Amino acid sequence: MSRRCDFCLRGPTKMTTRSHSNIASRRWVFINLQPKTIDGKGVKICTRCLKTQAKKMSAKS
Image 1: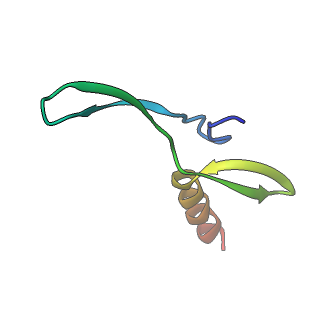
Image 2 (image 1 turned 90 degrees about the vertical axis):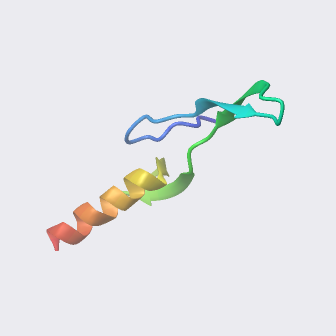
């Protein structure tokens, strides 16, 4: 399963968590993907793009 947005192609990023002793541990931060149907086609879209699409749709009206 792809963890990328079908619109902006944004994907997971690496992040460093720090313990109390300042030891770095690498971990992945995943974006908030939502399965949606747009124009009769199933896509995975991040919430940032979903919000932008909603703005574009309301501006057309």
